[in-house]
Length: 70
Length: 369
Image (tube, rainbow over all chains, first blue to last red):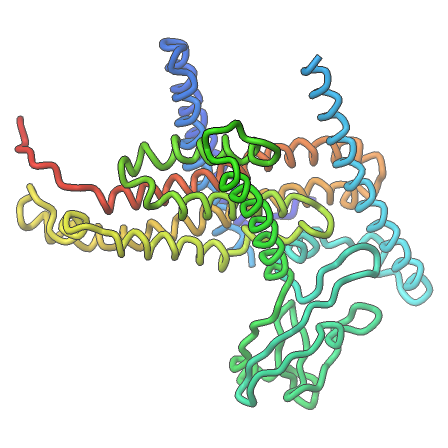
């Protein structure tokens, strides 16, 4: 039997959003590094920062889902 | 040679780390079995009733006692302020030998209801009206964890600072200095200088303090046994306080241009200025709130993830599940090591960014189209 709640769907949607976002960041970073390997370090730092910012937004959604779940 | 050395060191560290999970899971299943045997004769309800969500939420919550192992726990003092004044007692008085909450008769009859201290009526129900007046300033698990952090930071940084005072900054770093110095320089070069420019030295003490404080708390939170294990940086009150520091520093140091760009931004038609003013004003408050929730959510999510993976063993009710659960737990824990650093870094970086935006000087230049 599958037991769940709307909160789980919300968390799943948040994961989709974050997945797309982090995927785009990774794509951009890899392309940037491929074009300019000498800037790899700088790009990597910015990539991690941007990924953390995107992740945070999805975690906001997870927190809301958790609170909504009671 | 050195890579081999590093590899074996890593393997050793991971083995020790995994060992603690094994121990924790064995001791938990042992107590579960004990409970099952106790209740076996009277009722079957304990059989297989492992409430994962409740266990996890209990683990990430603040507590009045610090559980060490098995039935051993440190009972921390409870300090309450009610309309009858202050009162302090040990939290061991709030639970009996079976860890069930009991009523303690202080100035009022107190009882722990879902981790909160409530005042009880004579008939055993919660007196909601009186409970609102209880002001709980206890030394809880999180507070003790914070004291430990502060203690660690003071030891480490006073030691390092003394070394600099003795040998100066010109000689090569020695001992713990060699570990701390690159991190401080990293924060200075990656956070301070890019966002604050020549103002950086003024704000470096704040940025370094906030960075190391959050980082060491994140790391202690990942340690699954005594000195760590409190979910301090996953506590929203804690992260809110840190964000409040940033908020105050940003707005106290805000230059004329900072306020001008909030209330009456130049170069826009007047209706647009009126429209944007409330949005910009909201932005002043949303910035610290996003800092608060980012750190809180990241660390709490990490703790929940680790605990969920450990719980897999109890969900499947098979030791074999640990073959999957333990490697995953180690994997996530290692990711959390990274996240702990990144979140501390991001907090310091965004603080620097906000401060930098506030203290930016106006550049006299005309808009060239």
